[in-house]
Length: 441
Ligand code: ADP
Ligand code: ASP
Ligand code: MG
Image (cartoon, rainbow, N blue to C red; front, side, top):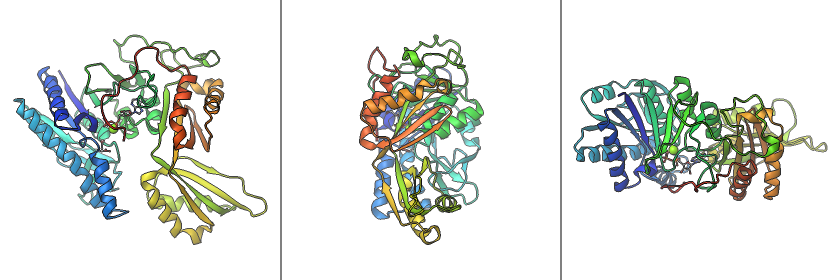
C-alpha cells in the first residue's frame, strides 16, 4: 500500500465536529495500510475573516504581514486535527508549510512554489506518524519570510507534496461529490463527472470553477499526479482528474447534446464535446477612459499594471471616436487587486495621458469549456442564443481554442449559467447535486 496525500478544505473542517469527522476518515485510511500525509485549510471562512480584519486596520496591508496573518488560519486547523487524531489513539504530527519544506519565491500573497524538500515529513512517516501539513503557505528562498500561495492555495500544497513524496494519488476532499458540469450551488441539475482530463479541468479552473485551483491542476499535469476530488461528508467515489480515463471506471455516459452540436468532430469519443459551464464573480473591471489612440499607449498602461504585479484577464479596446482620436480600454482583474491597480494607474496618469478611470466590481464572467467546440461551429451560436433567451446583456467576450467567456452584470450570472447549462443538454435527469457544507463564500 502506497503513500496517499489527502487535502481537506475549509468547509470540511469548519468546526470541532468537522475536525473529528475528518480525523476518523484519516485514521481509516491509515488502518487500510497507507502512509498518510494530510494537507489542511483554515477552518470555514477563517481566511476571509482574517482578510476583513486586516482591511479594517489598513486598506492596503503590507504583503509580509498579511501573509503572516493569513497563515495563522491553517496553523489552527493543523494543530487541532493532529490533536483529534491522537485522541483516536494514532500518532500524528503537524507541520507549518515552512517546516514541511515548501520553498517559494518571495512574491507575497501569491508566491509560487520553487522547491519542496519534505525531509521532516518523510521522517515523521517513517516513525509511524500521520503527517499534517498547513496548506497554502511556504517560506521564501531568499529572505526566509513566510509566504502564501494565493486563495485556494492548499490544493497546490497538496499536489506539490504528492509529487515530492511520489504519492500514488492526491485526494482533494471538499463539500461536494466531485467536479460537476457547473457549480452545484448554482445549477441543481449539474452532473457529476467521474473523470475529466487535465486540459479541460485547467480551463474550468482558470475560468472560475474553484473546486480545484488552476495552479494545482497545472502542477499535477506537469508531474502526472492523478487527483481524486471527492466529498469528505459522503463515502461516494468522486471525480478523477488525470491524463487518461482510469481503467476500471465504467464507460462515459454519452450526453444528449442538442442535435446540431452532437457531431463528435475529431474529439476522441470517450471525451465529451462540452466539459462544463463555469462562472466567476471574483473579478472587477477597470476602464481607462479617453486614451490617446496612438502606438505605445496600451503598452504603457499594461506596464504600469504589470509593475504592480497584478495579473489581468480579459482586455477590450473600443474603436476610437474619429472626432477626438480618443479611445477607452477596459480590462478585468481580481477584485482583491482593484485598489492596487487603480493606484498604479493614477500614478501613471500624466505619462499615459488618459482622462479618467472607472472601477466596476459588479460584474461576473460565464465560460463554456470543452475541447470539442473548436470543431463544432454550432457551439458558439447556441451559447449566445442561450444568453439572449435569458435576457442577459454581454459586456466583454473572449475566446480560446476550448473556451468562450463573456462578462455580464453580476446579477445575471446565475440565470446565465443555468440557461447555458440547459441549452447544451447538460442538465442531469437523475438526483439533484448535493452541497454538504460551506457557505460558498
Ligand atoms: P474547499 O473549502 O474544500 O477548498 P471550495 O469552496 O474551494 O472548497 O471549493 C468547493 C466549491 O467549489 C463547491 O462547494 C462548489 O460551490 C464550487 N464549485 C464551483 N464550480 C464547481 C464545479 N464545476 N464542480 C464542483 N464544485 C464547483
Ligand atoms: N485558506 C485559504 C483560502 O481560503 C487557502 C485554502 O483554503 O486553500 O483561500
Ligand atoms: Mg478550495
